[in-house]
Length: 357
View 1 (cartoon, rainbow, N blue to C red):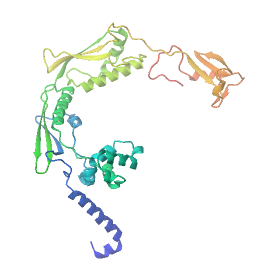
View 2 (cartoon, one colour; view 1 turned 60 degrees about the vertical axis):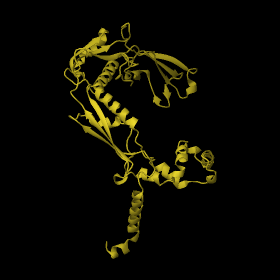
View 3 (tube, rainbow, N blue to C red; view 1 turned 45 degrees about the vertical axis):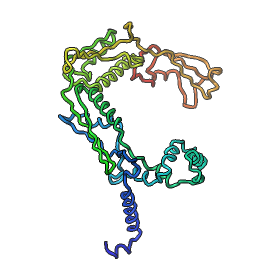
View 4 (tube, one colour; view 1 turned 60 degrees about the horizontal axis):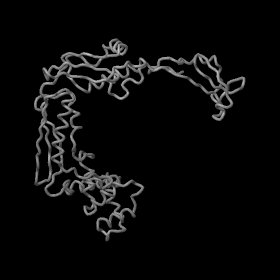
């Protein structure tokens, strides 16, 4: 950088130097400054796949209960540095202070907490910067080894849900006592998945069964697929939408009328799967939902209905109109002949795609 260029734009370089100095000071602050003795700051969660990778493996990190502090600017834990910049004397007090709603965070509340935590000499202090650091920062994530064990169980359950019934997950802690830092590695072995050997369906309502058979080519479940329960969930959603399109508007409302049965008695790798659809334990038939009475009120003011109106009807639509020669409201004029625009009528099957106008 030439002196001439610096003289022409000193403010620009002053900002750059100030920012660099600020980042340097934060970096000089130890990330483990507020990690208690005998504890460890969690810095990484690593995943090591022992045999092969599956397309859904990227979602497994969501089942880990502890995650390291986020890294923001230049991949540095800025929020952790800000938290560490606050006076540790007030950390416990401010952690409680931040649990209160914004409208209650005032000097009165701070003074009451000072007294609660036996800090009477601090009564009246604003703690502006300390509050700012706590608000913008985040406390260090301290390794909890029991949560690592629970995370391992959660990952195994997810693998089973995805069709890998014999998957195994192990973990290892790398603890550095000198730096107070810890890394966790999860070792994942998928093994062979469980496949759908045959696919059957048991639907007791003949009409519902017929509808399902008409659209069976659209089924998301096929023989020979991995028995992935996320696919079964999507198939249930597809069937729900299909039945509503045919007027079964209350079909599977509580989510307990469709389920799958997997027979693993003979094998855990090749499993017959059966779709079951039952309205209830008595296997009563489903009812199609139809449109009931249709009322259209054409008035200038809400107060005109119903005392200043008379009823008329056309094609099952009951019109309530003002007692005047022309039916003219604030939305324009409507004659009864215009009801041909309405494609709904009483007793029409209520479908998802029913047009109201």
